[in-house]
Structure formats: C-alpha cells, structure tokens
Image 1 (spheres, rainbow, N blue to C red):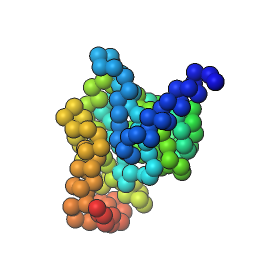
Image 2 (image 1 turned 90 degrees about the vertical axis):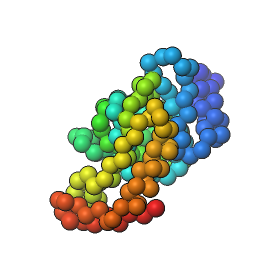
Image 3 (image 1 turned 135 degrees about the horizontal axis):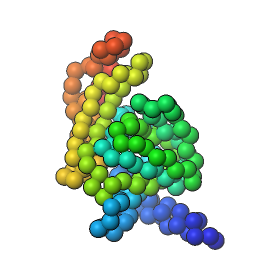
Image 4 (image 1 turned 30 degrees about the vertical axis):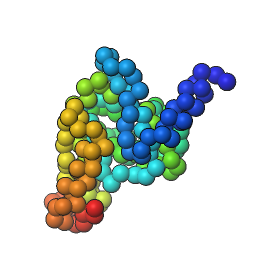
Length: 167
C-alpha cells in the first residue's frame, strides 16, 4: 500500500471520530499553516468567506463546490482534488456523499463569515462575520445561522425575492 493510501486511511479513521461540520487542526502549533480536517454530510445553508486564502483537499466522498464572485461557478470534487480558494471568495460545498476534507489555512486565519445570497440573482442578503481566534468556526457559523433565522424575511434589494429564514 502506498503512502497516500495509508494517509487517507488514517484521515478517514480520524474523521469518523469528529463531529460533522467541525474543523480539527492536524498540524503542530508554531507553523504558518493549519491543516483542518472536517467531515461533511450535508450542505450548509450559507456560503463561507475567509479573510485569507484557503486550499481545499478532497480526501473522501464526492460533491460540488459552489462559488460566488468568481468566473468559475461550480466545481465537482472527487478524492484527490485540490482547489485554491482566494481570500474573500464565497464558497460552499454540497456533498453528494459523506465527505472528508483537509482545509489548509493560515495559522491565524482571521475573520470568517457566513453569507446568504438570493437564489434568483445572487445578490448578498445577509452576512455574519466572526473572529476565528476567539470563536471556533462551527460556533461562529451556528451563531450566523441563528442571527439569520432571527431576522425578518430578507427581501432581495435587486429582484425582490424574499428569503424566509429557517432555524
């Protein structure tokens, strides 16, 4: 068995021990880079926006990466695929099967945001930004979902489509 298969097998075993939609650091402290392992079994209702560049490595499973503010709108991901996400690029992953991913981020990733877009014209409707140095990403995203759901219907200022918040 080659080294890549051994590493993937170890990551898959470790991924089974973590909660869905959580990021767990895989590199020792002190470097300029973090490798965060995550397991995904459903699409988030929002797009993620990172203050710094991110590299996404698809370890297991398949799905589609959806992008905003980019000339590439969707990208199908399979095991072994690596995608560079420039800082500020709204993205979300829609799994076809349960997936395991490694996300390479800056050691101090800075702000992240959860953003909702109009389903018709893609105008941004709502954004919740948080500091990842003081709040884990899963908690920051959960706070964004709560804030979005607590608001009134979000009528698109461009096309008028109303997005009804759901908890």
